[in-house]
Length: 90
Image (cartoon, rainbow, N blue to C red; front, side):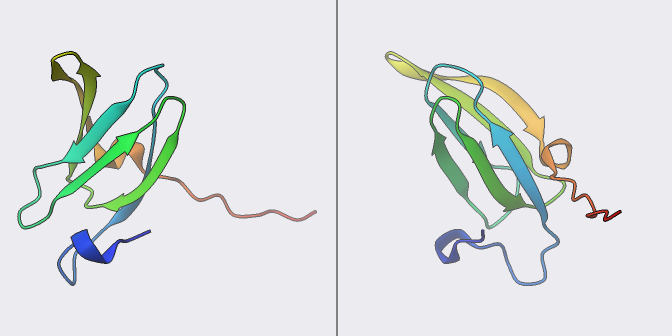
């Protein structure tokens, strides 16, 4: 789902991605390496987040720990790409 407030520039190549917060802590995820675009979301424990992003984007995972947030991981968006399977009927 593309949101109008932070849509990528027209003509941008995007892929559908999915990230799962498999921890028991709330996380903040963001993509910061794409020029003129800002993407940041809160992901609750065990929640799945579907988003569109450029294949060369990197998703940063931040976990909140008092008093600051800690950068836990960087994941390339192309490794989070959702693969569509064709339905097979017998």
